[in-house]
Image (cartoon, rainbow, N blue to C red; front, side, top):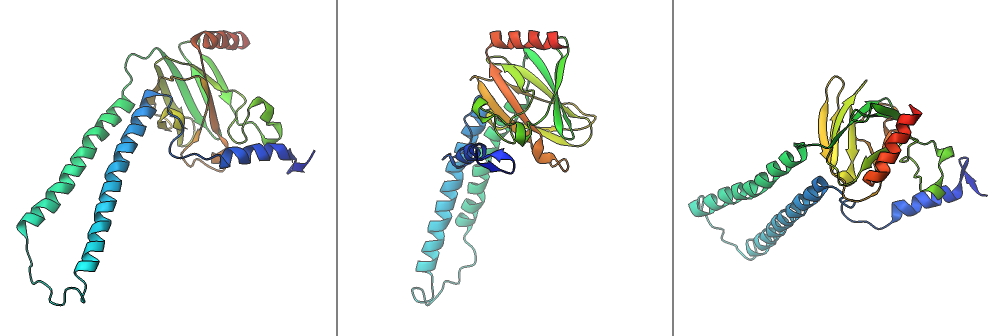
Length: 254
């Protein structure tokens, strides 16, 4: 078997295949929050593209129409009230078109309405602690799987898979309390559309309602020290029945 840095070459080949897989835009949205973020992003892309094209066309027109050869006698006009009113009002209207859905999205991502369960996540240097206060305080630490222990045949991913994944039930409104025990961390799950700072001595909140079963990966998104890049989070979204079985197994372990 070919080896690279003590690891099977096949493992690196699989990682490379994942990296170069063609993908444009965000990961698939599996929560209402992520879906709303994608919609807002798409709206912003239309606005940004429209402004960019307009400015480009205007610049090209000015270069061609008002260069020295095409316009040897330039105008001496210093003020144009209608034009000044337009270029003041149009940006204001554009900002209003952005700010209204922006505040709506911020409120939607921040509110936690009638959660069905709570999970507490604590950032440490450099791993995560997970606790289920609604389920007899089930808790565990979650560490990144070392390179030499990665099992590609089981779907594990280098620098992303952990020894104790967080299990969450689908179709359930879940409040996630986020804090830290030492320095600043940030709990981020791109597929869920969440990124919440973990601050020592403070409890921040976010929420998810996962709509699709699967395995999802996130990482600390706050520079927290030497091993910042090695504290991923793995979430297994499972059916409510499977989650109930898993939580009972965890209780038995404790």
